[in-house]
Figure 1 (cartoon, rainbow, N blue to C red):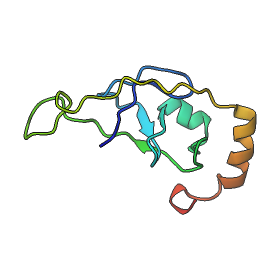
Figure 2: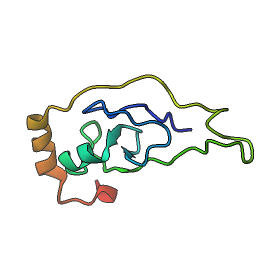
Figure 3: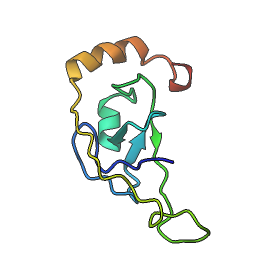
Figure 4: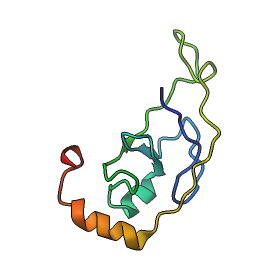
Length: 100
């Protein structure tokens, strides 16, 4: 199940479990929408693309929900070196994320 990380890895913006601003790559690297734009939809950790992070139900509709499976509180704040990232973007930005 997704960790639902609490902040953007680059800018450290709060991204609570219900946030529609949270974006993730396939490895759950978590960034806010603004930082994903800044990063040209290229994950600085794996080179993949981003997708909106799903929102875990807050109410117990039928078993699994946020109260039973809470979001992690572990912050992963590691601002991206934008100069180094520009090199990665130059290599992969013309390749659609699903083909990287």
